[in-house]
Image 1: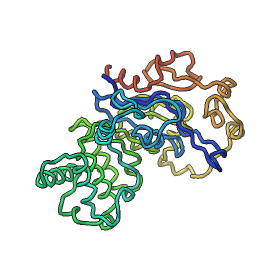
Image 2 (image 1 turned 90 degrees about the vertical axis):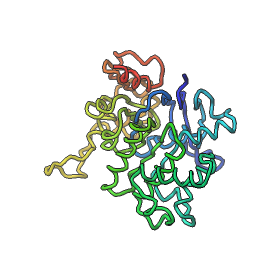
Image 3 (image 1 turned 180 degrees about the horizontal axis):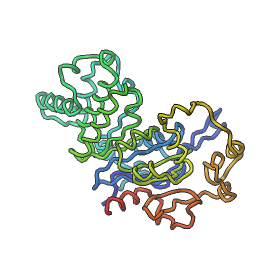
Length: 342
């Protein structure tokens, strides 16, 4: 059975300037990854701002077209899908974006975002059935019709608006929820409830979740597996417990070390320069992290490292692990499937 969604050696480049002849930014660089249609899991795609996380997500749902490589839905290329296949993709793969207010038209009541998918996808046979579906979806995300329906977006909190977007996604009976920084713009007190809601949807309804974030703490709490991206490339992947607690790639180690800890003797903002910072302006045709890497070798600057599979079934794109075998194919999801079989 083909995966629900798959990206095969996908790259995306953005160009600026007149006639797009200016600067070139490689947002996604030769990434391969798939989401199974058989096992519903929660996977994080993590990295700092500009690492290519959101661009990869937009490529996966067809909002952007890759410059090279292929994106497939149930084995069919997004470029060649029929109208009915595209409609099914939009129903089965539901995005939830960072800004909860951006998805709303301020001139419409919030009811509009709930009734529109029911109407467009013909999910209900009558008005009463549609109202029942809306009520059940709101209840699943901890909201009631009395406190939400009939109001405009500005009359609700950011947390309420975001949970309504989760309810909207549920109405479509999706196979995958793609959540792009869904809690970064809500109060800290509401983050746990929204993340717990996504986790419950995965466990109770068998919905896969792709959680896109820069926050390793929430990724660790919510997800089973994690992909780490840097400058558009995958650098490490594996079980979230292993990757966060025992990071192997120098970039992952840098990310984990940046998580704030309660240390009264450490002053924020005081960073000592090291040798790697002196090479920050050096160009590389190999590993993208080489200019910032404290252990960069000569080969790192000229040759791109493949994904090595370590003994604990983790993928690391770093020449420090060149004694380990390379993955038989570039799809890092094979690491997750192996872990699920253990």
